[in-house]
Image (cartoon, rainbow, N blue to C red; front, side, top):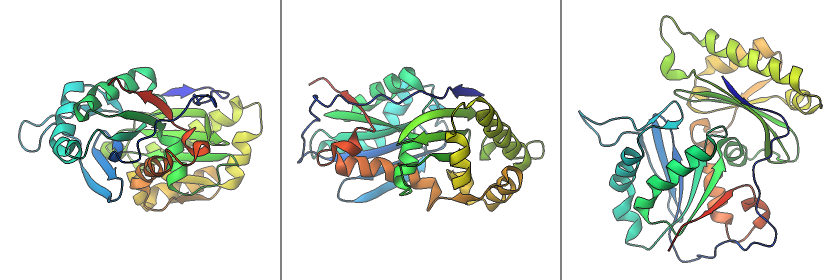
Length: 276
């Protein structure tokens, strides 16, 4: 399990630095998951939700595993296959990419290298926790505790004022469920993580977030067993967000739509200008 200590704030833009203006270029929101890759196109909405493989069929490999990009070239090949022809005929795109909070610089660098196949004008990266909160329409002015149950990772986030202040990652997900790994194993690990967050937090933020209830996201949130078991174990309401498997993508889409109109919203993303 990896964790980010309370007090960490996701980097924000300087108020004196202008955001890129590209009102006519195409726009894409992307979520690169270990099992599913999703894309949202400006003016069209969700254009695909497809397996994360270099190419379909026998011989296709998984370039992203447990939230890590293990094959940059494979991700680039996948993006070229899925998007290059569609995007480049309209010009160089503005891309908003969701990223694991604990992926750090290494993940963003690998993702940016893979995205070069799309010749982006600008890349904005958005922490998945913030993307889920935005995509679910949650009140960003109060503490939020989000559990994101993915295929290979389960992540627990605490957000305050839209910033991620604590994050933990469990190497367990829905793809691990079998005779030896059960729903109970996952929910007990989440409960232990939340308990540790409460003990380590010298403020009242984690406790306040718990009083507001826990929000469940990711593909695992489509399985009612998780919400039921976590409600029993945490003894607080645990509620799936709307369309939980696509919540992060919707949040990235909101950032994309607002990129040039609402700096207060786009300040939640990290600006990675590309070379011309």
